[in-house]
Image 1 (cartoon, one colour):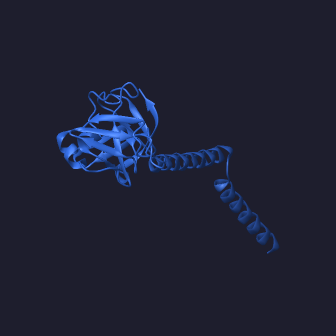
Image 2 (image 1 turned 60 degrees about the vertical axis):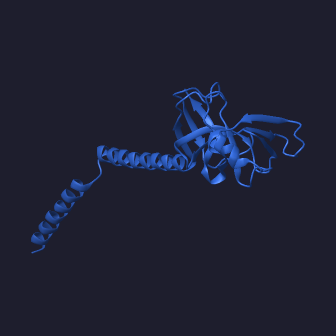
Image 3 (image 1 turned 45 degrees about the horizontal axis):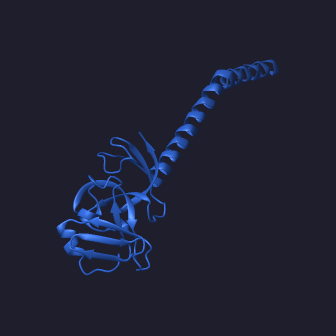
Length: 191
């Protein structure tokens, strides 16, 4: 009886070892597990980076020569959404009167003194109303009529101008751009 019991225990032990060896980790299976974990970690980091980039930046194609020589036709620009805007910043924005997104330079900021004479806007770049440092711009007839009688750029409004003023469609044509319409500030340019 003891012998049978001993034989049974030995047989059971052999089965356990066979089961253990079947599920035991081999060096190959450990490498596969590490590789899978590494792929998952890299995928997660890639998605997190894309999410961060998407919430902070916009890549925008530029078509046309309105910002030359600063930005050339066909260039891609990276716009940072969280950047603070100021005079002479190059920004991307949309306007309700025109389709698409524009990339232009801010020349007039809230509170700047302005004077409209016929279809000419005189912008006081000093912002103090002394008109010692000015910019003279020809306006479209409709914008000249809209700005007639105004003496300052309103709060949260900006006057945009393309660097190539001969061909640019900008605030001279569509008026002020509200702060809420500005997508962000130019961070870099890719030709």
